[in-house]
Length: 97
Image 1 (cartoon, rainbow, N blue to C red):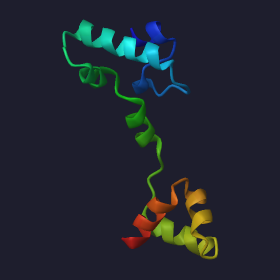
Image 2: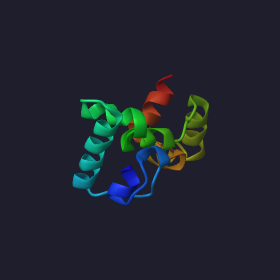
Image 3: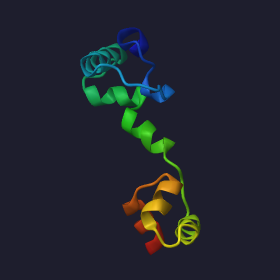
Image 4: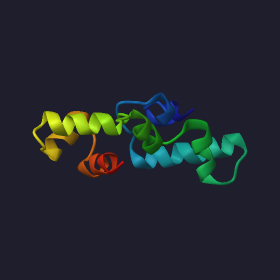
């Protein structure tokens, strides 16, 4: 139903692009109505969200990997974070552990 309305697979299917925001909201309302719910937030139970799928796609990095990356980059934390595919604040959190 979501894909028919937006032209993009539902977030749970991890599409490579997002639909037009107006189409997305219309599809969410339609899914909620079809499922018999009244709250728009209930649609996420059926199709998930783009934000949740983005979090699942992020790499899982251990503190040991973070430390090794910092050593490999000669102490350059920006380069270490880039090599791990994480942000600098995330790297600092891992190093604090």
